[in-house]
Every structure is written in structure tokens, then in C-alpha cells.
Length: 160
Image (cartoon, rainbow, N blue to C red; front, side):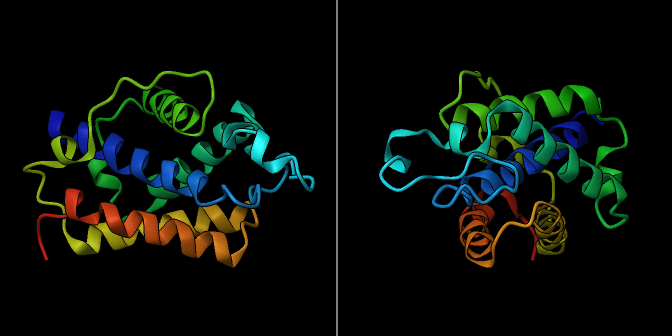
């Protein structure tokens, strides 16, 4: 059961980090602070996304999508969801230049031996796309996100 808990946290951390990082160029999370000509370069991604409240909203939607997904939700059966969300918010906050500190493990160690398949990874990507759609993130940012997540696949997926 402990491996399942780490699997859930790691996969969602990857997804949420990629979701928000994919919005870096445009402030693509609806409701986030939109860039003004000449100001984008001086604001962190954390600020352009709208700070911790915007990150928390994306995390909440993403975790809800995964929880409702029968293809992968059994991986979260024993997960402490409030704790998971806190870790996710901290990781995304830190990764985007915010004041939080994430103290979790890297993706390779987190997923080692969990027998995650390409189908599991694909289901997660679909849940991410649904979360992006809920926040009206433009197609360009979605594409960037999927590219970033795709580059992490080698550290997560063990089975075809």
C-alpha cells in the first residue's frame, strides 16, 4: 500500500507541475494575472499564474479528475488526499518561483518498481487535459504541457 501512495503523489505532482509550467508564456490559467507588454519578464511564473490560490484551484481540479478516473483511481485507495494536495501545491509553488518549499522525492525514485504502464500514463495525461480545459488553457499551452510531461515519461513508465 505504501508504494501505491507514493505512486499517486508522484504522478499527480508531475502532472500538476507540468500543467502550470505549460502556462508560463501566457499566464494561461484563466483568472491568473495576465502579462502586460514589457512586464512578463519581470514577474515569476508563480505571480503570472495568480499565486497560491490559482495553483490550489488547478491542483483541486486535477486531483478530482484522477479520483474519478476508474482506470487509475485505485492507485490512490490509501492516499491521504488533503496531504497529497498540500504536497502538490508546495511543489508547483516552488517550481514556479513562489515562496513554498517542496520536500518530496524525484520522479524516478518515486515510481521505481510500481509497474506503471503506458496506459496508466495516458490516462493521467487525459486527466490533465481535462483540468486544463476546465481552466480554459489555450491549445498552445496544452501542447507545451504534453511535451514536458512526455519528457518525464521515461522516469515514470516501466511497462509498455
